[in-house]
Length: 258
Image (cartoon, rainbow, N blue to C red; front, side):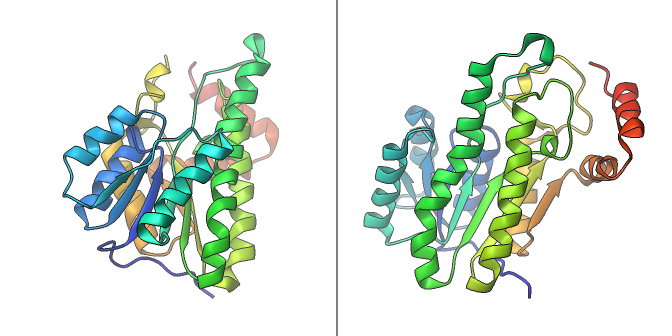
């Protein structure tokens, strides 16, 4: 059994959570250009308004919220339901990244990272699932990271949060495939965004947010579960996962110069 894609985004109702910058903003703009109706969510309402003001009239809905706040998520989703009656796709892009290593481990940073990157998408999925299950249709897409494939330097909190997203998406796919709801697990490599601008090391196979958005929209169109890119980098990290630990750690120490 193969899950459904979305051959055309024209007229589709799409909720982009994390639409104010980076990958989320680039995806939102591509959806709008493709004729979709897009609900724009993030904490930065001024950035959302900028996207809305430069988009065709009645094609966007600004829904500011914080993904760590359950009531804000609930109110935001209710606004979308009241306006459009439902959604065809929820794309969760929102997340936080703070470089963190064991010699400077901060549990408060770790807790904030898990709250936003793991519990945030879980909260959103819990909101949209009941309506999708009623109609036996809909798409749930969650942006994780190749950092979730295996342990990497400076990702002591970020990496575990994204590893958990992989497991969460795998479980969702297994449970929801018979119901007609499609799940898309999105694992980008290094993308030029405000978050990765914090990195003080060379980022291999770095791509633009617009390139990432194209990969994501193409994967959703085709009904792909595992959307990972850029392939030259993500396939290498997938290969590392199957290696014995001594060899894996040797390769990471040799080639990750940070």
